[in-house]
Image (cartoon, rainbow, N blue to C red; front, side, top):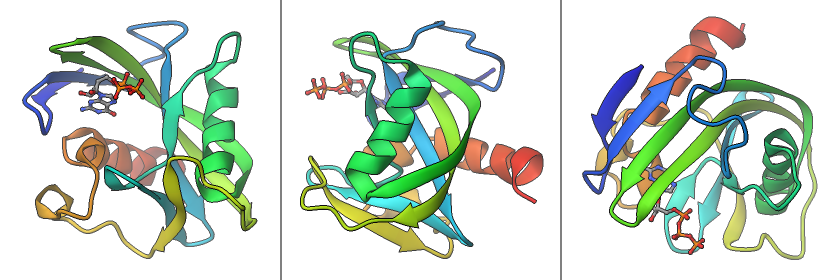
Length: 157
Ligand code: GTP
């Protein structure tokens, strides 16, 4: 378990165990790789972030993850694996989010990317994301570096 504060000073707890906080979380976040590049999206309000969002009624979180990648980037998921889960205790309530890693095999241009401006491909994720206005607040706490480290040491080869 790793506990830290997020960009808004909310308490975040991240774990790489199997669904430690909720069996059916309502939020998902997906670290995406397309070839050798990271696939992000540019949220219209928040800025650059890995795709993600809310799990719909009766939807499995993993299906929500695949759907969000498709809707926000046009990315077709080839494979997806659960990485971990985090809980954010905010002023307005608590949310639980599953983190996945997806391998994207194809990027198909879309007419709409919903609340985002669509796909962004990056060779590397900058070390100073925390201080860059172009990045979303959800990329600005320890979830990102810890999950990237997990991906690089456990999954990516
Ligand atoms: P909608 O307007 O209904 O889309 O939702 P919302 O803006 O209220 O946000 P949501 O229910 O997704 O999340 C509620 C609060 O949880 C947000 O305002 C954030 O403070 C926090 N939150 C959501 N996702 C994350 C995340 O990935 N990381 C961190 N640190 N906080 C998050």
